[in-house]
Length: 225
Ligand code: C5J
Image (cartoon, rainbow, N blue to C red; front, side, top):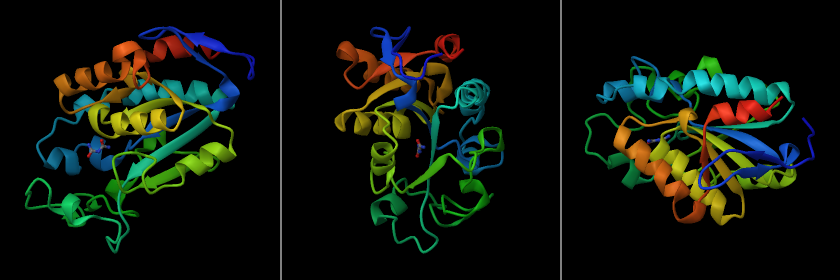
């Protein structure tokens, strides 16, 4: 694979063209509390297997991406231990008896430094891979992601992770507004809600790719050789 040559990947609504040297793999919120049995997501009654099916395709894609020496970024959704970056609206939303910052099954819920907030071991970052701690759903809001991308010459993103309709979708929209092209491999993103997963992908690729492109990890793996 030539780092600086444009490569076309099968995608919807039409092939996604990217230059490996300036394209990063961005894994969104593959955190224990969202994905692991016994975590906060499951405590709320969600079926974590719907998210866990994304682990293996992500693991394969990440390994292939790393093997080519390409850039990788990770995000974690969470808050400072003093909860200074947690808006009251987010704290009370859902009227759940247990909310962000409270003790949960894997430490304080969505608080930085707690076990549940950490990334799952299967996709753990290397020391050279930036981890972006984000207080919101979008990875650009109140983070240094944009500066990191500018400094590293990143112009395109392969966006994976959870959940399809929330943090993945919000991040793709934010990236699109900042002039970045995003490709979403559908098997590498997941939702607790199958219909919202499908809707989330449809929203990205509709209207000629209004927010980006949708593909499958197999198409990416085929060109990463
Ligand atoms: C993410 C959420 N990561 N659903 N968070 O999508 O609250």
